[in-house]
Image (cartoon, rainbow, N blue to C red; front, side, top):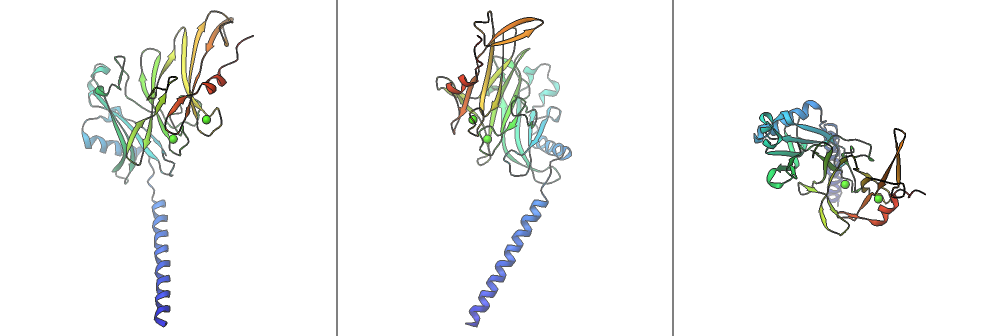
Length: 287
Ligand SMILES: [Ca+2]
Ligand SMILES: [Ca+2]
């Protein structure tokens, strides 16, 4: 009986000790969380370049964001190949590297959460035969009603998507694509979108402003279901107020625009065109 009591007391004591040890380890880990500074980001980029010898620091574009909302920032880095240094034209640049990185220590050692190689053969850096530049994200911007909001949780699953600026298509057009970070299987996947006919493809938006038409896109939860819709906003200049639903004053003259936005809602797997939501944001026709 006494042996049993001693055993019980010892067991409780051991459990208390183990719990205390675990608590101290967790507390210590939390306190030692590595903060990504510019200096550390620079060291990590140096290590990436050392590691594969294909890319140049000169082209490095990096931003910091807590992609999975776990309290630690990840480093998001884009690098163009070494050719960038000596390229006469963008056509000479062969590839670009994109990675989500977590620091391992203060010396620049790192874990790669997921990465992606852009290359000509994947036909991503080229659209219609034009080089688009180094893919990049412009920063973690809080304005979620703008194409400048480049790292944000669009579909409300607790993980941020990365809106990637693929660069200019021409004088006035630009191209954007959206990455989903799948941390569980270490992949970066393109966000899918289904058009009016139900055809699904990688999300891609090329827009800009020209004399007769202009377009942009933004994210907004228009039906208040907690996930943001993607709105592709198209406007065409038309000849008369009867055809228009937007009037713009320009040096004392009226310009008549037909605004035809397209709203796409999250269905759990991809974004799909939604006629009702699209109609709900179309401006009312003029009297
Ligand atoms: Ca998300
Ligand atoms: Ca919504």
